[in-house]
Image (tube, rainbow, N blue to C red; front, side, top):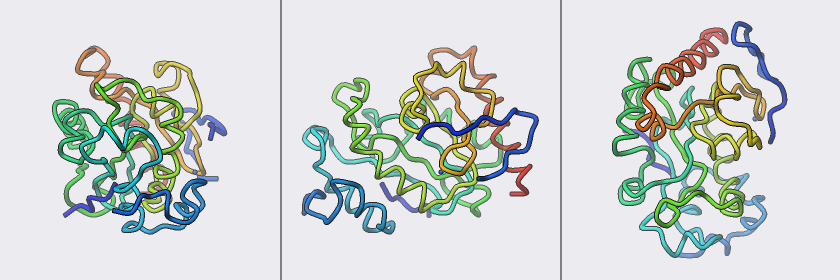
Amino acid sequence: MPLPVAAAAEMVVAPGNTPTVAAKHPVDALPGVETGIGIASMGWSELAQAVAHCQLCSLAGTRTQPVFGVGHPQAHWMVVGEAPGEQEDLRGEPFVGAAGQLLDQMLAALGLSRQAGPPQQQVYIANTLKCRPPRNRNPDPAELQQCQSYLLRQVELVQPRVVLAMGRFAVQSLLGSTEPIGRLRGRVHRWRERPLVVTYHPAYLLRNPADKARAWADLCLAAQVLRAAGA
């Protein structure tokens, strides 16, 4: 069973090159959580509890439940999405519904799964925000900032060999860039001492199927990164 637990780019590597790796008690009652210091030392169980009881922003008052993450806790791939939607909020799992089904199909085409298998055949999936914004509105910058320490700790615990950033807000949160996805995809970015590939969010692909081929090329690029690293 998977473990169901809820910066700027430093350089760019050309696609043909091999990248070299050089990044019910309220949670704010936990020591250091407000500044992220406490979060940076948490294990999986502590981190899941912190997210479950987080009250650091107003989304705590409107969510059904937080959406922490799912997948192998030491997966070679880590997929980072944007914010939970209605179905994610109800089920407590990222990327469910039609967008999640499309993502699972794309991953399966590479022999990957969120559900079973060794680390090299699994992904760990998390969102930049752990709570659904009301009416699926865009994430607020302050909300992204409050949640960032949770995501960074997930990355440090998983230690993925490649990160796949899906969608505009995931890219903004991780790379600190406001450039369009189309200008950032197609190459390997360096982020926190690990390779990162930018691609479109599956929900976008459902509305714009013509870009599915580009998204598939992005996944193949990420797979190429792992092959080049011998993973």
